Amino acid sequence: MSRADPAPLIRIRRLVKNYRRGGQEIPVLLDLDMDVAAGEFVALMGPSGSGKSTLLNLIAGIDKPSSGSIEIGGVDIADLSEAELADWRAANVGFVFQFYNLLPVLSAQDNVELPLLLTGLPSRQRAERARLALTLVGLADRAAHYPNELSGGQQQRVAIARALVSDPLLIVADEPTGDLDRLTGEEILGLLERLVLDLGKTIVMVTHDPKAAAHAGRLVHLEKGVLVDALGG
Image (cartoon, rainbow, N blue to C red; front, top):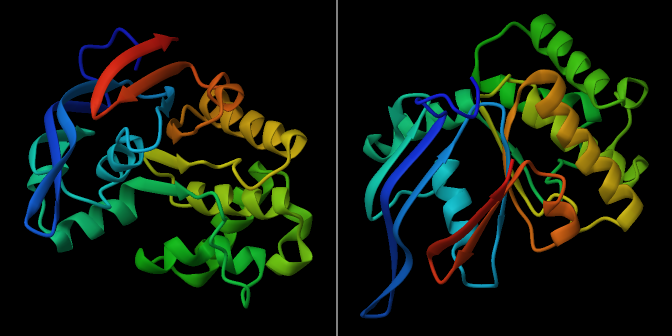
């Protein structure tokens, strides 16, 4: 799908998200519209409290909107039940977090296999797909290592392999370089770029770092729950 395709992978319309704090309703996202084409790398930026992490969680199906629609691959995930949403997430979304979220008692191979435990694939196929994902991120030779035997950058590569292993429609990344030094962060961002360019993956990334955002094809800027800028690409 090209950027000009009339059917984007992600189509958000009239999106509203409010939270309740005590007896008060706090608006976070205000009537937001946004499209993301398949194969795009989009960075979400904005000051603390702007709604960027809330938007990422809504796109990932971690949270549900107060109103509006979020169509991903033609499915309006705002209409799904909690159980349907959990199944949809498992099949369609890969997650990359700032702090890796690897299980310390599992090897890199077993950490990468975790999302596949929900799919019913036989163990041999799970292992083959995990090895392929680790190869894609350059860590095939670290498959048997545990997280405490890996550097921060290597742990994040394992996390990216875990996000890839189910071949998701979408990868969401929340400050993926926030816990890394500049050089290692650049390597991780370069890897994310290659996933888009070489594999056609779609990535939506939250970052506070303009240098990290520069790796994306498009920058989306939020201010107080409103989309104020969409540059690049």
